[in-house]
Length: 616
Ligand code: M6R
Image (cartoon, rainbow, N blue to C red; front, side, top):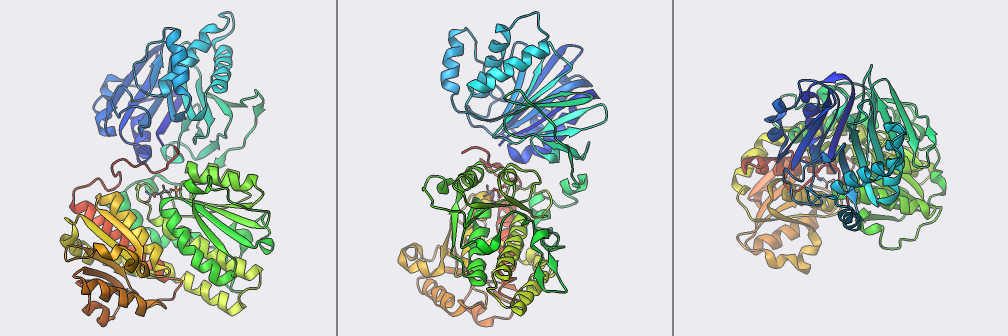
């Protein structure tokens, strides 16, 4: 979950590392550190808390160095203190780590018997000392580089878990060593300089030529070359990919927070995701352009969608569309549970992994399990070359652009539009819906970007409404049909951003228990647009009112009867059932956003969270 960056070349300033870490801060933000090697002297600065604390120490680092590494941490082992911040040192070894070393205790016990002294409570320091120990065992007449290679091979054989390491050996100042197993790492190619980072975002100011390092690989970076070998020692040749992210995609561009910017980027996120994938003349989905190359959709008789968090709620939403369009049974699973429930799949099952980052470990492990059990696997991800995409038979990118805010917003809309395209594409392949129906749905989907654009105007009135709700301790969110996952998403966003306790429920489920919570102190956010469930949802709202509960409703523009029974009313434009969940999600995000702002919370980096969750 941490952010790492590394450089080798003709020279960079401490700000290079700091700015790169800033781009990765969404991955972890409880402490940070930088190591720079110049004139054979190593300088290390670390600080507890956000990166700004490290910024104050940059002047202690050399003005320029030709080799260095930086880290921003999301604590797993040991508190978020300066002592536990990376990089960690063992004599001539300086090492930083993204991941978890599961057998660190037994390794630590062994190293203590060898008189290693531990300065931190981290699992990472074990790796630094173990590498040092392995290095010391080797013959001094070999070159340091050869010995480092051998020592790294020994290290990776002994550790279990997930790790991406950036390593400097002060005796070998011309090489930056990078090791990957289970945690993401990309390499960047520059002119007379090369880079490594845990995400492309850290490198786009310097290069667009990226090599994705794969599991079980070690890279040896010199200023003018990159050599990759696998853990068996075989040399690997890999072509770089060119990424088209620009620096300004990674800036706030005048918005106060990335989250607000990203909410406003939803129209483009949807437009870019569907563009080029709809044959407008034929009114069909172009499944090749969508990314279906190896999977034969005609053969699929069951679908499983696997995801976490917001990606899970999008998948729950998509289930309604898949079942409606294709009449194929669909299960949606939380990835963290899927792996452990002996799911039965076969070669006719399509397992779809939905993940913005493409790196969520639970989703990755779950889709690997599905693949091992012969299911066809499809990745729907935002990050090109991500681990989840790498594992799956086919990969379909969403084009949301980089999402920096920890709370997922524009990725949700892009994921939903992608899943809708797939559901319609499957209906088309399996002849489950007539041509006109599919063409009309695609037409409805094409209108989504402009409808979201219009809905964004709600930001101001929602900001006003939140004045009343900002001090609440509890809130319920309810909806029926497609609005149920929207309610779940609304509750998740409120929890993660405002730290207010919130629960989402299917409106019809209220009477089976949660209605006991309703009294004059409870407010309920009711998703009640004019859809096929409208009348039943209204009855549920009445039941809440009868018990004194307060109603904040999200309904169809002009619905005066809903407005009349609500304490507050947020109207969305009347639209097709394809577009509707896109529109009702916007107020969910804005509501959570404005409440968090009013409460003075850190919207882009809420407490205890990280953007991409690469630990179990
Ligand atoms: O990168 P992913 O889509 O796999 O991430 C899944 C969840 O961790 C993510 O959606 C998380 O729940 C967000 N913080 C929600 O806003």
